Image (tube, rainbow, N blue to C red; front, side):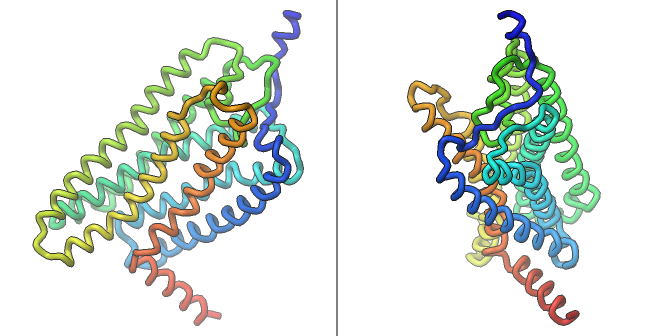
Length: 318
């Protein structure tokens, strides 16, 4: 018996919505449509930010990075989810789970920092407009984006390596669509106190710190806007911030709902808990990246003009 307990697993089983076959078909169709919208919407924003000189500003540079990040994040998880939903193949190798966990954590950490950087950019643009070109020079905003990507990657390497070095014994069933780190840690047959401590430090650095930057940036922005004499100036300032603030609320709100909700299975039945986990992971992993380009383009005249220019340029070329 002791020998059986020490048999380490070589692959994991992702439950997803295995108990809801009808929902799996609906989810497959919805996820496929949303994934295509993610690729198209974010792809258009990236191309527009590269080829239209009017979008060669720090704000659109960060937006292009955010769009590229959303494509990378969804492409690392959505295709495998679609395959599991349509083919019922739910197993994932140990190394495949590690890769999926790495990309998920890296993209999430990087996005937290990028949203904080974008808030600081809006603060400088509205509160210090005359010094904006000096403070947010090309060297500065490229360095800010590079720090976001590098720190997110390092954080993910640390968290993934610490999680995957743990021994996983008999239980290899993950009650999730993806190899989400908390779901994987539950299966470890060893002490995970080090993982909990490093996750707490990571949350402080990549959740609390960016949120503080965003909060204080918008406090100063609000103070500056309220002091403006021009109603047109106030509307323009609110317009440039509304898209970013909407994305921040959706992104951080979903994260806190995922990690702060009650984990007790006594309050929910096992099947209900499984469905809830699936719905939340879908919203966080697919709906949010799909909404980003829509939110940033709906009330943004520069993006609309850039997209129209690209479409007209393509039509003339043909």
